[in-house]
Image (cartoon, rainbow, N blue to C red; front, side, top):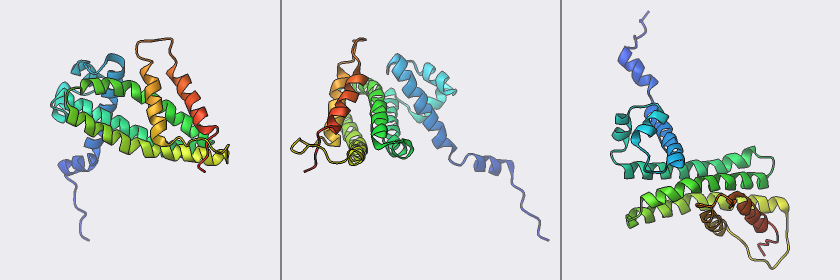
Length: 205
């Protein structure tokens, strides 16, 4: 009988760590996003490291500059928001509930996005590329949720303009701007009212 090969410790460790760097980076970016929301994008790296449970050297190894970290967090949050759309549509009781839940997540995302945009000010090429990435990833998600909610409601009053995914996202963004520095301004409530308006009286004819 041929003896089975013995797995060496180094090989076993390599096997266990397949895919681990990606998970480590995902956890680091999630921690950085949370810190940015609480303390702004100028938060000390040591605070991010403590939240992620890693050493500062780990962060610098992945992201040598703060600008690289900010861009990575931005893209990470865009991806999380994009991936939430199909999941919510599958898990929610109705398509409208999925749309409203996703919009609430998007509003939460904008809080951090505005801070990231400020940190990237002055890098027009980089900012433009990120804006294009943002639009390409999130507009189709919003549009699909909006279409599903419309289909669920059935035909509505004819002759009204159609609000598409891009217009809805832009309108949400404009409403969220007013929340800066005003604790009495309820962006969530206004955005949900916008969603109601987008769903009521809309016809594709």
